[in-house]
Image (tube, rainbow, N blue to C red; front, side):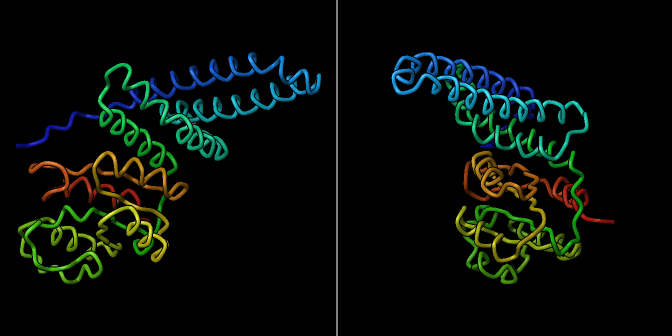
Length: 254
């Protein structure tokens, strides 16, 4: 059975992040108010100092969220805001997922929206690298599940038989001079990145792995391409090769 993936919308993630920010600010204010009597018993200055600290943190996170929104609508943003934006995302993302559950929004929809926002932010930075500085990273499930050849440690073992898309991606990456690696999980993916030290990554995976991977390797720029799952999750997955080629061309210096 084919899995139909709806087109991701950036506004879903933005709406949840804004709601999460509001909820976090209200909760923090409530905790501060409740703690005032106890803090005052220790020192008359403590409530004020804690209040100033919390306001500073809230303003920094708000600036980060504002940076995301400005980048999405095409406004130029300073580098410091991009760093704050990612810090805000990492901090508020679990809260956004929780709010999604309350409003019965599928987690994968939120993750797809996050990936769309992340891709947009990376493209806004206009990152350009040499071909040898770009890594194409795919999960092991893109290989035919009955294939006898081990390619996770040695991609050259692929026979390009055409029964899965590994050979097609390998041919594409060889022709464009970029690295190509297949990982069986997050640990191996991090090892590959540590070993090759790429300046940018084009990651092909499902919503969950792309979301965690993008957050794990920040500030390394990552473009995420969702895989296709005609046989269900983690089995003989596929990818739109034309989309992969377009993404590579966006990264490579001409």
